[in-house]
Image 1 (cartoon, rainbow over the protein chains, first blue to last red):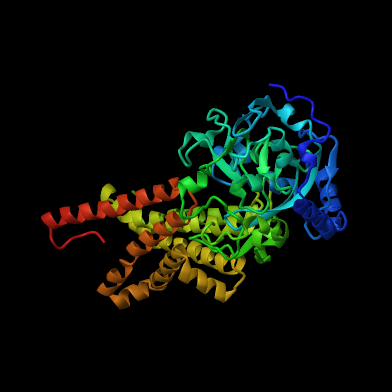
Image 2: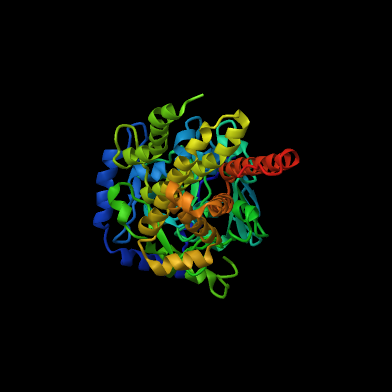
Length: 322
Length: 209
């Protein structure tokens, strides 16, 4: 199915004032493209193997000062992607057979425009941006990662969700022959996730197609994944093949697996511990002997994005809705 | 069947080398020698590798008595203390790694961990229960304690149960490896119960420990 030529003012260009002001504040806070971003680029150029395809025409968005990205090797070698195995090194080791192209995404549910869309039809109408985000895993480790993608909201608006669209549900591809982890019922495959419509439309929520300026490697969720930087990593579903606008809160994989340990919201919150471990601090992933004696750092509410997103949860009991 | 001298001169040194091997690999990984790499989260990789080997060697220790009775040969008993002490060495280093590298010697946080995180509580208990076993593992202590030594060293059973439980409890979702160790432990303990019952029927005085 084709997406018709966009109207003169695309819905994506109409930004609510609150969000607009937030964006302003974010940019102001960032101030300048920090030395860290330049450093990251210099480092990345050295370390990215030549077989990774560079993405053209990527707009650089300033990163908050003080964020030093992890290396390409760390970002692509230390992953939780149970579809390829449960060890951190499994996704890089076991994803060689995975074919991210051609790729189709089914758009379903409470929207005017639905159907099956090619990767290019989804992505190419939009300007790719680089966003350097903190990434906080529910297992209490973290990284800083230069993602490339587009605001998810800009994409979703093209399908004209109806007033009944209160949530957005996502589903990962099911390919046990290419994803050896799916041959064991560690989770109830395929992996599913969900966001409220407000979370999905928030300008920080990114539909990611690349990292470090190159196409997303399989172990990072090729060819299309979410990045919701104020939530624990498992919310940012990978290798998406289905997006569904729903009226009811959709089921989510980790919540189904262990409802007392993983909630629907899963906002990073140092005050609400995982039943089995503390979320008050995190270990910043860093290779090399120097990191051995580096201590943990305190975890920030909403992973440091409270100024931008806390208002989404006004009146919500965050301890109960963990 | 190896003789006493051969065990002492050949097999025990080889067993020491085998037990030290995971530690050597860890060192090579840390120093990034050749193809060895520790990965992006060295502190946790060290902590987990040490803990896993501590548990594996503990189960190996517990396998020696059944092995003696199954083969009808005495030599497995010669390796029981060696394996047990190596297991303790790995567990001790596992604990030190957690204490120093993971928690940065912050006593408050560690006490909170031990009090609030059940898997750390039982892991710590298992480690503390191993200490008297390691201390009294010498021939001198064994002589001094007499029959009490055997009773004391039955602590190895709760230690092994707590250790398996600790591992099972801490994994996020994929319990296949911890379940493997639980299965091995249940086999080793179950074998003892069966053997004890059989021994009671034939000769009430003799029973495996």
